[in-house]
Length: 321
Image (cartoon, rainbow, N blue to C red; front, side, top):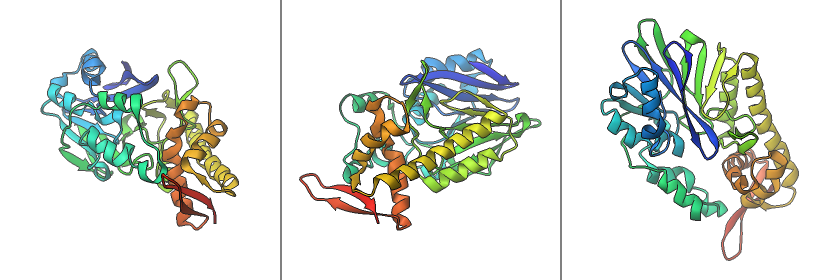
């Protein structure tokens, strides 16, 4: 646990060799936890570190799911057992995904099976299921622009920062000139605790992601905290925004070069992975989120066309129009 400002604490966990930093904001009249980790993270590190920060976890006011991913919503059930009166909220556009692991699989992790023949199987699927926890209903949803008061003189604003997820929310803290951004922007990938890049960027909606990068770059903040990246200060925030935007532009350029010949997304993951980053090659298929988003956008603009490759397992392929 690290204290960033008065009443602002970064709870420190781990997910697959990456940082997992969840914000706990403790005011005089209310408190807020951003995200609930995986199934047993509330007991493993969230509740103990809230206690270390001088908070009473049983009296937690708000639990905010910034977006639907395993390490952000799957501790919801256990967290609500520990903090039964807390109001569990998420982005309105993600409401149908945040109920639990079954919804997460149906609407986020298993949506590329039919078109691209990419899905989680074997040990990877078993691990996801083991960290999925019990379902928990969302109490309320926000769309961005709402304000939450934690005490006299301390008011937060929820910001819509879509791209990685449609309903992704961040918390703007004007009192401390800070933004607690969750997974809003990704730079060139998720760093590993032991160094290097552990996972590629996984945004899905390109135009919205670019708008989010622009919004963060122009906010009047001096501190930016993401869930999987070291805290950014001052000009580091601008550099992180530039890095995030540059990755998007690189993807677009490389796709245009490669799609003079037809390729499936699975083929593109293997081909482009080594060109885009030095994350472990066995995780190259995680590029499906980014590549699907870019290819959908390029098809909408008439730059690329898609068709079904006819074989025993029909799969969608893409080529320059």
